[in-house]
Image (cartoon, rainbow, N blue to C red; front, side):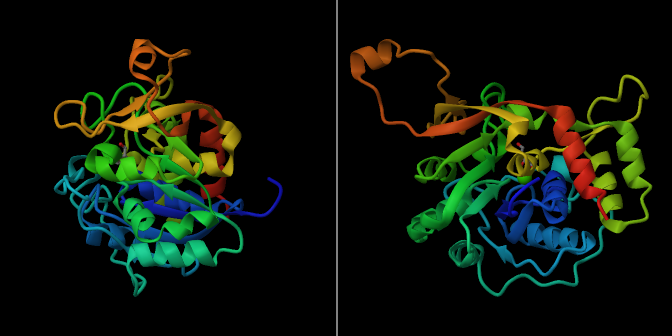
Length: 321
Ligand code: BDR
Ligand code: CA
């Protein structure tokens, strides 16, 4: 790695894989984690704040400000993912309560403060429903002058998870995602197509779980709660990095292959609501020919990921002492 660390703010719903993202961001020398903001998603927002503070503490992070954000999406009700992330949102592995406290300002205020205070433009990394980000962009549009780009985990080119076509973070608050896409800054979409592919092999998960160092051990315990199919060789349970892959792509952009494509969010009620419609056509179709082209934001969409590269990158940062 060369040059100065990238100033980063993560907006998350910690969340097992959000925790894997935080552990990486805190420990990778190429990332300067300046703040973390919390939003309802995988669990309720107070649970997200508690989990985030605990993870930062276990990771031995410096006193990074943590802001409490939106309790619910702009329009939709709260619909948690506790069946995936456990009742406490962290796999119910018995994590201690944090001794740290959240910032005395709300997430939107904290985001504005830290974005504008950064000596260099910030990379914003939402790994959660986009409610806080939409509120920020509508409340303080001036922040875009000091945002380098937004790398968000959300959406899918192909198959969804919350519905057949919609990914959880976008489906949870589709209107907020639509606001994000028109932010007027460069945007990278780290969607399900790449998200689901980056898996840490079982032998590495076992080694992390046996570590005497609390942050490394926590990483192993969390991975064990994101089981993928067993390793064909060892039969051991491997674990998906999920949201952490989005932060890996900030530290190492060459690890993903992207294409600049028109993306829009389906806001219609019904089975497509929350779908990210990614236009991969090589040329205009009959709709554009007869009705004219519609204005659509262009997003750098991750279409491929170098899995061994990101696994190695993540492990080397998290196990770094
Ligand atoms: C996203 O939903 C959450 O459950 C994960 O933390 C990730 O951000 C994947 O759809
Ligand atoms: Ca998340």
